[in-house]
Length: 338
Length: 269
Ligand SMILES: Cc1cc2nc3c(=O)[nH]c(=O)nc-3n(C[C@H](O)[C@H](O)[C@H](O)COP(=O)(O)OP(=O)(O)OC[C@H]3O[C@@H](n4cnc5c(N)ncnc54)[C@H](O)[C@@H]3O)c2cc1C
Ligand SMILES: Nc1ncnc2c1ncn2[C@@H]1O[C@H](COP(=O)(O)O)[C@@H](O)[C@H]1O
Image (tube, rainbow over all chains, first blue to last red; front, side, top):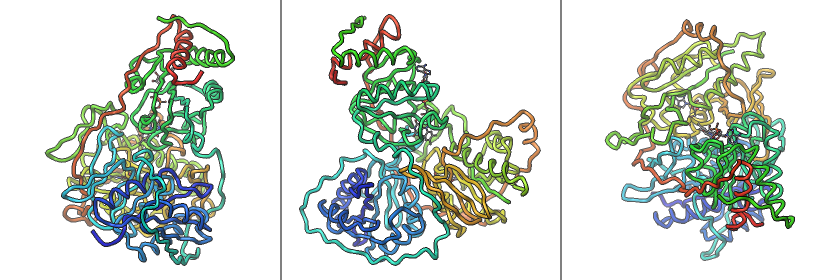
């Protein structure tokens, strides 16, 4: 492996804090750097990101590179790729880790093809052995895991959220902050952004919610979801969905949970009318307690749930919601223990 | 206008967990007892192309679907022709076993096939193939052909000789404009592939199908790969010990569930 550092592309939140998945990448990259005996670096891209660079430098890493340029204010494929390649030429990292996010889904393959190296996307871990560094990735709907060795340098991987305990700030070594000179203009860019439309923030509430009430195809309609919204509202939680309700337009695609949606690990995940496909479970398997309501006793979701009710949600959920509301109002509705 | 849609055949991703079997001798995963299907996002990609064909009535739009692999099932690809694609190009060869190709090799081979095909204004792919979910081949093809790539497309229209694409973003979506030719990688937000009529199914049988080997697209020997599969393994799924909460009626069960969750401190009363 070359001299360069294992480097994490740190993504910033709207408030210019560090994305949780980037903190996970820092932790994983730290382990990889330890195993391979290389340095650990982070790179931050954006406009006026001085404070963020300071924030990143609170972690236990060797170098923070900043790529600060007005044209990096918002993500644009070609500009970000060009800037990142300028950074690559200067820093020559031996490996690059990114969170598996909407940004890296677009950026990481561009960089891999531009550098003529390989990339493993959506990884959940790594292993380091005699043959070198392998990344672990769920394949075939998450039923199988593949361990993949990259021939070529730098190695590149994108990491799935909730794969690693996030790094915490801890200053153990002297951190060097390097401002990379970025030269950018739009002349080479073919793709032009005409408009940015802000909808429901993609799963932001969902991401941080302690209780998620999620509905699936079994909910049957947008109106059906009102029931779940009421419950979530009462519990101070957020509403999620499997893919069909998003595809069918009952709810915003922003709240999809799963392999190609958001990944959540709340204390409680209440899955209503969801069969429990592997692609859905990939997004919620980290929940502490899973509660399932489904009219089919054979639904897979019961295999991974802790509590379940077999029945039509239209009868189960109003009673469920009512019981919690009554109890909170000091009522004493009694059920029958069977 | 000429549109190429890259469609991959994969084992049904919704097959039961036992359907995917590790073959350690060949170091690959084999599907047992589940049918091959069109990769899900590739159906969305084809739908995006068909919608352009629906709206560009003044222009002649020709949609070519292109699929690469070994043992490609005719029945699976017929679906694309029945839904409205005009012709099919198959690149079929023992050397193109998808289990042994990485994204780099796949993109390079597909780009060669597209070059051989010649004229194209738009190339569509899915955002990721439903077997390995790499999400790299689209960008790779664009790179090899030297054309722009737009990913995570939720809607595509043609305007003034450009493609206008709504891209999914963390905060909603953005509208971008890209010149033709471009490659567009499509997400499920585009919508499901239309259902063919009986008539279309019959007509599909007469649509042109071309088969190419690796030599036809200028590939000799096994394609160079940069990813090596070191092994496969199975990991235990989250295990719940599901306690089914009963009740005389579904409503009572719901009420009992609520009380139980509050009693166990799962939900604070
Ligand atoms: C590459 C790929 C990526 C994917 N990514 C995702 C993803 O990110 N997230 C995701 O969720 N899916 C994803 N999918 C789709 C996934 O495979 C499943 O198709 C989907 O999760 C099924 O959703 P569902 O459980 O809501 O629907 P279904 O499987 O149709 O289940 C509906 C359930 O509702 C129950 N039901 C019906 N009526 C009632 C009622 N009145 N009361 C109670 N229960 C009722 C039924 O018994 C059934 O179990 C992906 C698929 C692929 C191939
Ligand atoms: N063997 C193939 N034949 C045709 N298209 C493919 C093939 N492999 C990948 N693609 C296309 O590339 C997209 C992304 O694939 P991947 O990068 O492998 O996840 C797929 O959705 C297809 O549109």
